[in-house]
Image (cartoon, rainbow over all chains, first blue to last red; front, side):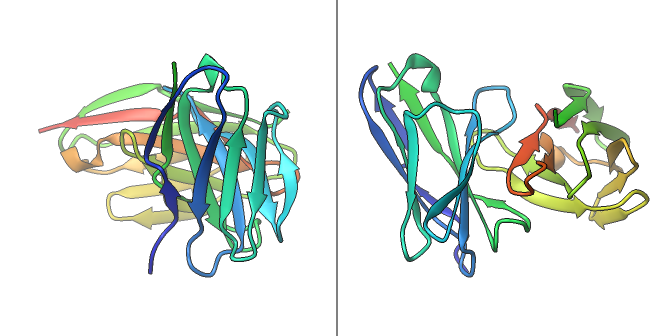
Length: 112
Length: 110
């Protein structure tokens, strides 16, 4: 049984560019949440998708957007990248959004 | 405002030296407290969920306990492979997002 998968594993971009990160949830899960983890910090909630809709959003600007597909996979898009967007981006999946969240390995984004 | 504070920030132990990690939380109506283990550069690995004061859960050398204001992760006779960052989180008021502490980085030397 495959767990949560994310792609790519690493990414290097320059300021002002746009990036798309991808996530496939654990089998049987229908809800995807995205988190940003800066070095030495705990993960911070970006948003959660359920039934292809954004159910809740954390304190992140509109430059961060997402999408969920009918097969429950999800994308995180970040526009107009800033140096401060450099972080580990984590995807977590759950069944229904109110149960335990299981995390993927993350995508390390570096903005130069 | 929902908040999670973990202490200490870092802990160094000798193999076999038992200790505890603390997680203090402030939340309106606890909807679950979660412990995760995170190895460097990897995603958090789920360990435990606790819902009510007095609840305890165990897994190998780890035991998590919960009171009305804090949770403890007890590590009994740790081994070097227990070295990792341990994260504590609570569910937010809406019940969807996890609010994490900064973590405790545990180093166990042989």
